[in-house]
Length: 451
Image (cartoon, rainbow, N blue to C red; front, side, top):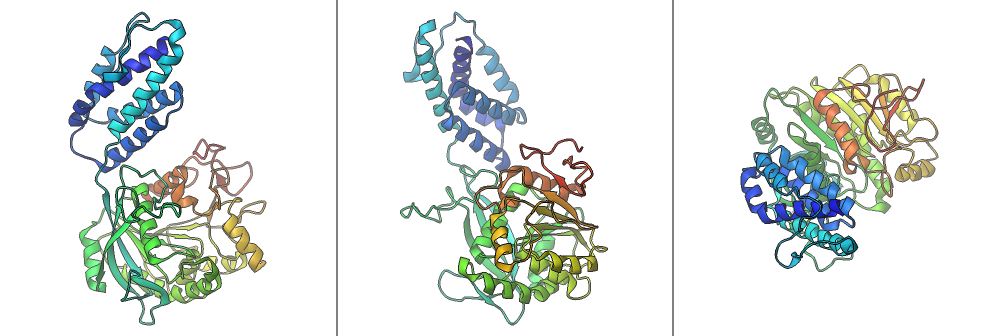
């Protein structure tokens, strides 16, 4: 009984004084506001007192890192009440003394107060603008809503800057918010609900490099992201923005978008386009040789790994600043990788491969090709000297188990540490099975002490 009374008192204190808390937090901060929105959602969705307690803990952890902490601590101290005290909530939620047989009513009232606090905290927030620099060897459309098509540009690659908004109030780490197919009446370009691709500026190669240089300095790095199969230019830009936002990468994130058709039946055509894009991708990396940045990191997903791998091996090493090279769910034949990887393993700073036994998309690819793929484990993961392999099977990788690199917070955090600090899997405290040459996550998808 006392626990419920105390919970209600804390909720009441925060409800009654949230405006004051918000003022004391100071200037808006996108990451803090994102965390507040997540706490608000958990409060609004709470089904039991324990759920409310957990959401309140998250909320107070957020406030602890702001100037409002002392004020909130005072509010909670005042809300500490003895078992015989009268619990009240704001307005229509007020009620008098609580008896033992009133537990059900008290729990219901606490639930209402928790959901109300969630609504108060989760007020609409301005979308956060992410700048996505891009290079692409897609052909420009010139008509309709499609800026770039799924056809290759015979002239090479073009550059530009895309503006993508993240809906701070609705966004959850790892989620690429978009309108569902059963919501046709909603505006798919509503920036408060969805990740939205907005303005696109095409830039000359010179302007592209100078704009990136203006956004960085000698203490920062670049990250080049290469998307996979069945991805349109718009989808690629939205994913790049969401991944960059959640990754909190300390520097510009550049998208390289090769001409995928963006359709499930286009798999074979995408294979040809990925191969043809490799030399153009290599030329793009050469264009990033000069600049104030320290390192150029590469991360490719799915079939995009073919673009990256072939691009690094089909001619001279394209960029002396290449740092971390990350293969995620690589849709690459194991024999092809075994032949090509030794050509590049002595270059770059570090090579990492994320794989999973649950990757159903790569399982289908393996069956269709009658050839194993790097990114899917069948028994033991694929390993090679010079390549650090991370088995992500223990992480809940979703329905297809293929997009986990940008969807699962534990893996996003692991990639962030890899790129930011250059830490090995051992330094990131991943688990190494006894006498095995690869690493994995613990049962909860989190890092832990190596063993």
